[in-house]
Image 1: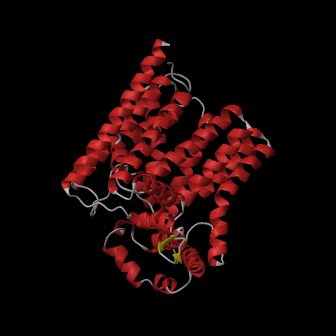
Image 2: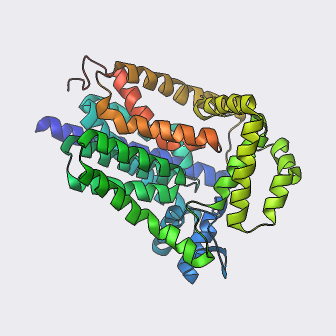
Length: 404
């Protein structure tokens, strides 16, 4: 009992340190006069119009499907409770991220034991990319929590093989996909994994049913509003094509702008309605792949490296006060250590089946971003898993679970 009390105090202290670190960074950043946008990728506009006008649109009176709805709904709730300000968003995202850190602790404790969990929590509370992205209103902070909650529920299913865990896992997978549609293939992989593990069609069916019940309202809304079926968003097809025809070292630079301004497929698609532009992008993309198979393979390798690289490429970073050299060293001293340790942790596992859904999710997100857009930011939902595996490598003893 005394040990448990000490552990609770330590967990609370680490979470408190994590909150103070995030608060200190927010105070520093806001007082520095550095640029800050509340409406990155139009999420705040969607949230504002959802709250004020009860419509999902960037421009009032023009219903939209430019973004998946989970994150705008979250922002609308933040605006309703705390107002539309940078502090309300920053503090809400900080709390979401600390909840992710706490869930990381609970998940790591069940997987690897108490010692590993405490180290994972300490790393998560001070992880530089968590602190940075918990200030700026990107969806990846919420997506990190939803992804980890989904995997935790599926881990609980592995332990109990109960119907309730299968239902919860399906619903959480649906919410995660509503935050970012790259989770859609993961629903299929998880359905097959549950069927393989349990040999029970009922439980696999319950997972798929609750996933469908959660995700389908978005698809039905698009059909009723626009008159066509759209599983994700029209921008997915555009990103698929753009990432084929743009040199990998030119994203965010002049080369990308030149492609956007001159590529004939992009110019033609701009004049088409969403369902036709999506079809055009996918047809043109598949045709490009058939004509350039070696280039396609080469760029997929480049995108894999870009997704898992230890530090960002040298380009203009709008939302930071740090120089590129500072960003590079911060990244090398965090991701540059955590990722190799996580790889080591994978090889130290006595059995891989208890972490099956973890590796399915890592593979799913990696492959999705090899086909679409790839950057270090999109890796953020995987970093809780990387941190857990890295902490396991640091505390490893024989077997899956280190001794407590």
